[in-house]
Image (cartoon, rainbow over all chains, first blue to last red; front, side):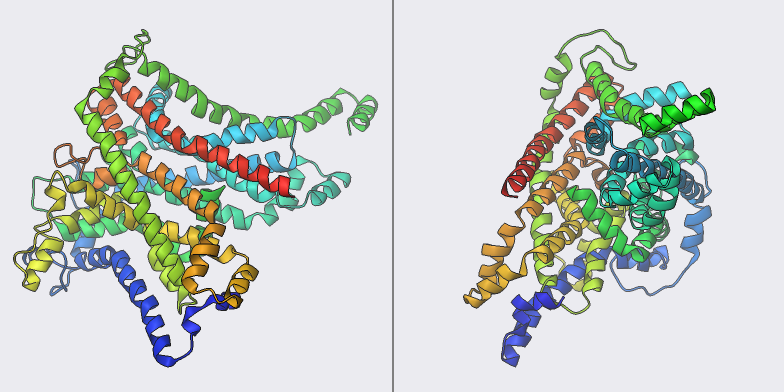
Length: 297
Length: 312
């Protein structure tokens, strides 16, 4: 931080100039903060208003009513796609899909990363390069093959099918993350352990895993957020009550026939956004690290 | 290693030999399932989709080869033309907008502002929110009867109109605004990391020479983080090409087909209209677009590492 002071315009002499410079920085920051926070604040406020009031005053206005029933209705009473059980079933679907896929793909990625950084063999660098190509695959390219495979495995419209898709797709990311992290662990540590007679798994358990928490947290956050927020596979390979929450939210706001119940939909939207948001707020540091690594590598 | 293993093996029997041998190949064995899965996912899936795009498949896959007929059909299709025109318009504005906002915010935050982590948290949280949620909520705000237009009317300016989302010519710009909202924090985070990595001695030297802040940024800092600019550009272009959920949630490609994107068109062709071959052809075109972005980037990265190693 201190080094930044070297070109700090706020440090210019003269108190008026300093105030001016400060305003020049803080006013735009505040305007942008408004742009980013506006949707969030509005959705939260609307989830506690009653619908008549929303219709009278519009979505953007200070609430004059307070009502927490929209939350309950959204959770387990609202009708989505024929059944009236709210979005709770879809929320659980998302959990059942995201948690296993995150854990499995992260575990596989850690082991792959370990092999590709500490047990290199002829051609392993090439194989690593080929594996990372999966990171760039556009979803649309793989829809037909997945439909074919899920159909043949009898996994169409099941959570297991979605777990399979997200795990296979995730391996490229998790391997990339873990390999690039493990590469920086000194090889001497591994060599010393091998001389002491430690084998493949022992080294992994005793040396690599204890050093892994930072990268595992980054990987888990990345995978969890990505899988939870996925819509494409959810909407194509599942239907009705079997859908994850993102697909259900789209179905919910497409209920065009009745009056739009913005308060209930606001609650539903918040419920759907909550798990990744919580992870972001509590693991923000790791989230950003994962982001920069994932993007630049 | 190999020698000791065989000696130990001859002493202690065949079981030990096998275990030793297995031990030596263990890394490869462990890696194999992932390799197969990724290989199938990347190469077999691509070849399969490519083949389908050249076949006469319609509702169900068929393997009769018909050549490039579906690609010709695709490029003569009005909706596809709208989709890729939209991709260029949206992609261009989205990438420029997100980068400009991101850079601006990063520079502001770089001025030793108070509460840096709070500002950062505010600008970045949209990234944790799904495109579905983002698109749905902005859709409400853009809705003239309930959102921003209604709000301004209530303030007393009754002539105010903001109905872009229902206007065929303007709807694509609502997608741009929403997309920038979602991605500029991401650009900011990367730019900020870049700004912080610039060699402080360079900056100090320029300051001693009496260069203005403006000049220092444009002449020294920005050129020094050119690789970050390119990385952000590539990632955002990728996002743009793959855009699907955002539009689906915000406008559903409408009004009419005004905001269709290639990724949405693929989905429609394959899963709504049962024109598998043409859908596959459109998917291949998306891949081609991605390659146009990624191949030059890969070459650039190689050039850069080579230059760095050459310099020592």
